[in-house]
Image 1 (cartoon, helix red, strand yellow):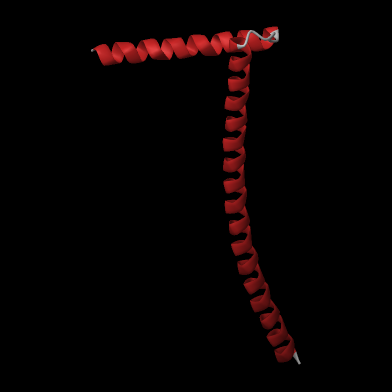
Image 2 (cartoon, one colour):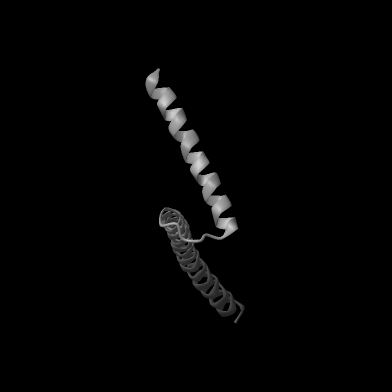
Amino acid sequence: MIHEELQKLEKLAVQAGKKIESMSADNEQLRARVAQLEQEIHQKEQEIHHFKNKIKISNIVDNRPVNPEDATEMSDLINNYIQEIDHLITYLSE
């Protein structure tokens, strides 16, 4: 009787071990998928940000009214672009 109970417990332990291995593999796959989706979201957010900047620039070019916050942000962005261009010109002239 004790021998049978031990065999049942051993069988349950083996089944539990297999289930844990299976769940661990599933967990790793899900973690990889989450990381991939987070990267895709980040890329999409960057695309949206660049698209918003293009809209703001086209509004400025078309002399449409722009929010003061947007104008300040665009001014900073343009200044950064100018600084980068200046650095590149300096680098290329050396």
